[in-house]
Amino acid sequence: MAGLKEPKVIINSDECKGCGLCIDICPENVLEFTKGFNKMGYHPAGYKGQGCIGCGYCFYQCPEPGAIIVYKKGYIEEEVEA
Ligand code: SF4
Ligand code: SF4
Image (tube, rainbow, N blue to C red; front, side):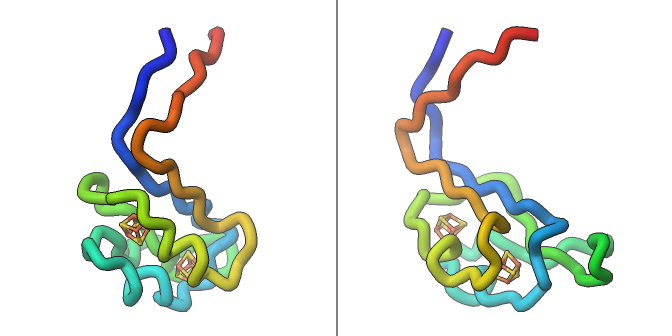
């Protein structure tokens, strides 16, 4: 069953260069640097796991194409067959 979902953000940590622009601009303060290192040696940004409102500011601020995906409220999650 497909369903309507709450907003969320996914960060592709290996595409992130750790600039922090997304963290600074997020109005809900739901992004933070993660403790680990990515393959380029940066601490990538990560989602705290809740509170994203799907505004997309982080997506537009990020200089790295493909590092951030924002799912706006009501997106439809397709069921993936195992
Ligand atoms: S979409 Fe908006 S609220 Fe969600 S993480 Fe990005 S800047 Fe923050
Ligand atoms: S703006 Fe993009 S590159 Fe910069 S910390 Fe956020 S996800 Fe990483």
